[in-house]
Image (cartoon, rainbow, N blue to C red; front, side, top):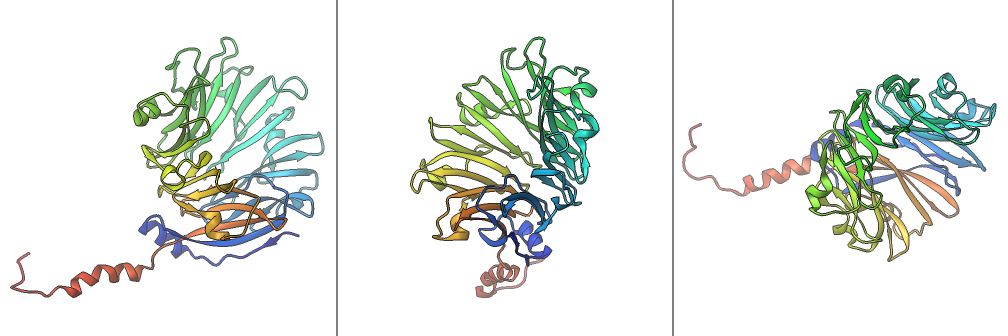
Amino acid sequence: MGEWKRLGWSASLCLGAFIQGPAQQYRHDLVFVADAQFGGYSALNNKGDVFLSAVVNGKTDLYLNGVNYTSQFSNVESPQAFGINDKGDLLWQGYWKADGRNKVWLNSTNLTNQVFSGATLVRAFQLNQQGDALWEGCGGIIDQCSTQYVFKGTTNYNYDYYSQLLDGAGAGAINDLGQVLWQHQDFSNGRTQIYVDRTNITNDMLGPQAEYYAKDINNLGNVVWQGGTPQFGHAFFNTTDITLKYLGRDEGSEPQAVNNHDQVLWYYLRTTSDFVVMLDGKDISTPVVGTTNIGSKGINLNDRGDVLWSGYSTIDRRNHIYVNGLDLGVDALGSQPYSYIAAFDINQNGQVLWSAKYNNQTYYYLSTPVPEPAGWVILAALVPLLKTRRTGKPGRG
């Protein structure tokens, strides 16, 4: 059965990490042990609460800090965790046995049945700190998706914000103010545009044949999105082409996230197999792995500027996950071989939730940055003063 490991870190540790910047050392706490089968998505909030999708004794369930959350929902199977905010709200989805379809839940409320009970497919996206849930649903011909909709809670963005119920849409992200970044396709002409709520921010700026994909929005209302052709999609920050800004050339690229300091995490394809992870104009991945990683890709970043990213190494032929330049798997597991590793999220305190499969089980870890002790910092600053012999008279202030 699954096993939960209690943590011992304190709030003062997180405060110290924030004051002193990104730490070079991490403490790795084993928080859950499950079957070898991968359980799916999992989530983490800024308090260090862990919301897991895990397989235990052959059955997929959700676990909130080690306690089986979905045991109270006897009519739900194969649930997936998508979000937990600092208030403790939970965003998840699962297969509802009553009608044989997936549904999206906010805590114990079935959002799908409230507004779109006929959805053939649904997907949960994000949960903000206010408790607003962003999700997608599609319906039409049975078991197919002829029309796709974007929802914030029970608000249908296709209809309520664009008055076009039969067009297509895709969710991008939601910020803590409740602003939604999404994409809308007009079926009458095939054109796609990027919106923040009701505001069209692209307006065919790349031409009528361009493709647009919504990615992320921060609490300042600034957004990142991908636009261009299928061969050369570029990364954009608002209306600025950051691919051209930082590379000065046409390269296939994609933004991943933007933090509340307007730092942008993105990647571009340097060769057919060599992806480069970028933070604004800084190459994050090459100094760490050179060109030995295939498919390096950013996952997320926080307001401290910590970057969570991953890549497949051609040297040991397995995936790796990194925070800035630290290989979390190697740092935590040492020489322990693993067959699979995945990172789920990084919070504003720099904590990372991730899992690895070895010894025929899946192990979930919460890695926490450990800053230098404050006393050592103060002592280091005093040493030069202690070594200096004072001469002459004191100067006047």
